[in-house]
Amino acid sequence: MKTNKVLLWGIVFAIVVQLAACGSGNKDSTSQEKTSKNTSVETSGTSSGNYNGKSIAYLTPSLDVPFWCYMKHGIEDQAKNTMPGVKVTVYDSKDNANTQLANVQDAITNKVDGIVISPTDSASCIAVLSAAEEAGIPVVICDIGTDSGEYVSFISTDNSGGAKKLGEYVAGKLNKGDEIAQIALNQARKNGVLRKEGFEEGIKEKLKEVDFRQMEKVNRDEGLRYTQDLITSYPNLKCIFCHSEDPSMGAVTALKEINNDKCKIVGFDCSPEVVEAIKSGDILATAAQQPVFMGRTAVDCLKTHLDGGTPEKEISVDTLLVTQDNINDVYDKLVEVALTDK
Image (cartoon, rainbow, N blue to C red; front, top):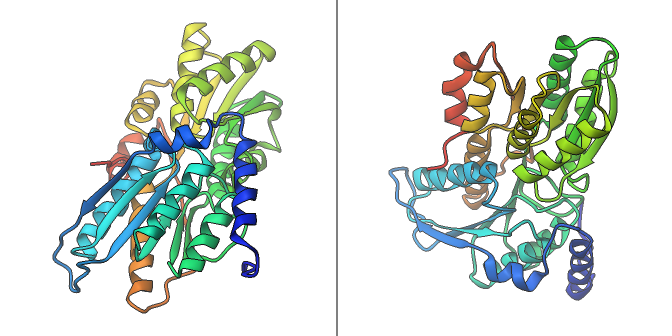
């Protein structure tokens, strides 16, 4: 996974700009940079060591998505508890690869000591890693992943395994031959590919996948619109798998609008709304990631590296299968590892 250090940076930048421009849901880079929300916090703590004057940047895809807010909390809180005096700056990339590249350049200019990145997509992450490597700044990747490049550690969800367990659960609730569909993450993201393939593996012996829709913004409106589209195209649809929490709630709204109680919704990720929807029966189940825990782990890996140690290169985190049957049993665990953003 070594990058070719003889490549000119200008060529790398041009490639990323071209990749980002291909995303139908992305605005131009100028407008995105102007709306990027970058925040900094000074931390204090009681652990050994003094990190006064040290700084960390967290490059997040979009703080409009609850999942990334949970991860942000894990990063900031763990830095506060284990790296007293360190400054944490959060860069919101507004789901735009150009903006994320501009953000890493800003972080480099500000001479940060380390970077945690959740890439906007796996292809554009290559240029971000290349820029950080050239500047001598260590990077920990927290979720989504990269197609190539140098990094200290990669903390990821077991997307395939979690989606497969969810698919098996759905298969156990439906009849053989029932039709299902997916509202999927952009397949330019490695985690989106793994979720789609894992779910298909879980249902393949029993259910029939008829179609899928690919999201760009990963928001409620996409979940609503794509559910309306799928239900219209496939009136006998029995289940829709949404790859994220906000689209899952949009799908719930779409089904309620037409009084459809025959099609079930299952999701990936969690939120307080999803918890309530599971309790009420509006969502059958979800494979909940652990973003707070993942953020904490990312800081631990970066700290180990900065302290001269060698953290694990690849860390896979399990999902929690949350259903109507077990929601009360797993709720406290969910709050601890997934649902805290303050």
